[in-house]
Amino acid sequence: MTIERIKLRIATPIEPIVPGRGFYQLEEDALYVQVGLFSAGRRFYSFLESKNVLLDFDRLGRLIFIEVRAPRRQWKIDSDLKPPAVAQPADIRWLNFRDTIAEPGLFTNCDKSSLLIRFSAETTTHNYYLADSIILRVDAFNRPVSIWADEIVDDLAGLEIAAFRKAFRGEPLLSPVTASA
Image (cartoon, rainbow, N blue to C red):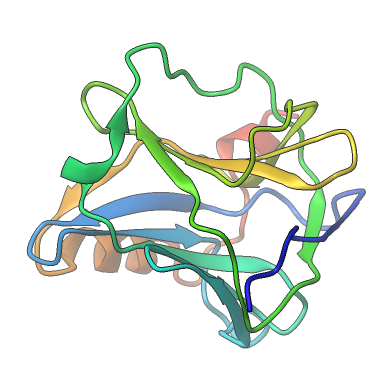
């Protein structure tokens, strides 16, 4: 059964903005989006999924990983697609688990370095950082409208995502956004 609306709890941030990035796996034709770093407190617990999109969560309901199984040649190109100009930090917890969601729309810019995963056609009222290059857009009722993944890099054999994870191993989770605040 497909859930009708994804539910969120949005509160004042309790941690700095975590690192994140999208890695397009060339040999698999899939996008992997790392949201924060895996640690003892940030390991897979549950999921929401559609045919082409999988969202993984930790035991606290924090989004930790996105997999887009549709090849980017199937993403719809929108030459006017731009990242949100303003986003705020927040503590975002996803409240639905182990369920199927309606197939989101997949929209990209001309060079396919960004992806908008659109859950609904509702008007966006707020933009929140899920990670450095990943923004959640919500409606007036704090329901997800879309997820914006920016600065997607091509990856062959998982080398780029492995280097990304290694670069932050043992580092404090400060981002350029929070470091300048």
